[in-house]
Length: 149
Length: 277
Image (cartoon, rainbow over all chains, first blue to last red; front, top):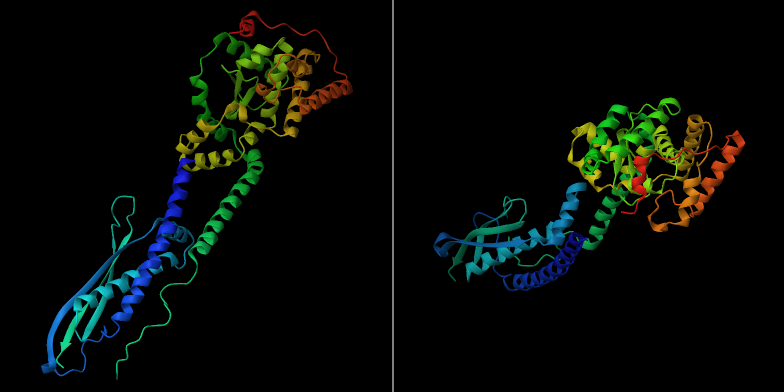
């Protein structure tokens, strides 16, 4: 009985706090994406800029680690039984990738363009005993080019 | 190509399903499956009981044995009851079981038929007995449950789990031990039809053994005079169900012409249980 109460409280806590945190994060992501929209981050390996015009080229990267909440984990473990899209983890990955891109842009400062952008994802704490910590890291990296006016 | 900075209007990477809706669908589906399995287990009991072999039943008994052995043996009483059951079984109730009688110290006015032919008689029952015939009726009633294998049906869904785990994991597995430990002996439940059949079996056995059916219903009718109704398991007589059983037994005895005779007294070694402790 106590186990059930603990379980349900964690579930409610996970849902309540998790939803609140996610909403806040998405809000912040949307705001910052708007302010950094003029710094293009592209997957092209090169851009059509004459070499002498490029003042600097520099590696920039940004990473974000996001943890899964209890509610999402239960939802995902139910999904593990039936199969199908693990919808509860989708927003997690989306947030991590977009946050990583934003941090990468932040690192680039007043660069003109970031080329050759790649995004990597890694799970953290997967093997830490039986209790799955269940964090994921998204890392974005690329080459920031600053072009002379 | 000119680069035009703009934000995508929609987020294609996140499914817009509400998480609570998803939880409801998944948890609901799982619950439906669990309930379905539970109901199927209930149906499986009746299908399985007639097919369960004696050997397998003896293995199942292992889970309960430990519970019986723990209780203090009341050697004289156990010997007497064993002899009585053997006599009943020998001449009048030939069953494919070797019945082993165990006496357990408990206030419960009850007896229980456990798998593998282990019959548990509670001292609370013995204390209420006034004659050998009365005791023989109760014991024959339990033999009746063995004859119809009600003791296996009484285990209910636990039986299906125990059988499956015994076949798959062997006789001494954790599932069986868990069920065996969790089961309260007096809680084995029988349906009204099963009780009636066992009563009829007991009446026939009593007539066959003694030549008369004296004291066959006395246990039922005696209890309410001096009993705490809450404690008397399925023998409690003021319950309408038991009035019906008394009536049924009396009708049956009249119909078949079973005479009443003089009941035999209980031997002295049993009398000590009548003393308030």
